[in-house]
Image 1 (cartoon, rainbow, N blue to C red):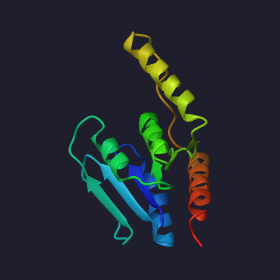
Image 2 (image 1 turned 90 degrees about the vertical axis):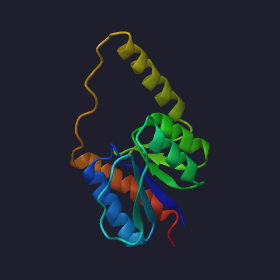
Image 3 (image 1 turned 45 degrees about the vertical axis):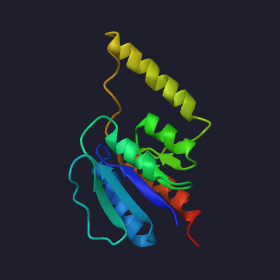
Length: 151
């Protein structure tokens, strides 16, 4: 059986709630990793891991735990890239699956934008808040992925 790991420090509450319901319904292990204490519902298949503070500590812990075919929920593109290299899958909170085919271009764009910001160029204020459509897209992508492993 697969496990689902969540880069929980930045994961929106509405996405966590979807994940809790899926874990409760399917029994798939859901592991939230963060560098702060997390409150999770009392569902046997859900657990949280608090790691120490520091740059990429939670990401590194997820990479250490993830196995082939597991799913990682993250908007962190470098983390998604490492997960894909290990044979696992990565899904962002807007329901977009990162793949071997699209991760390199995502990394390149991320690096380009970071270079622009560090050179003083003001770049947009980030993505808009999640809306109902984003949550539905996420839930549908999650259901499609998990359905492959449930029988």
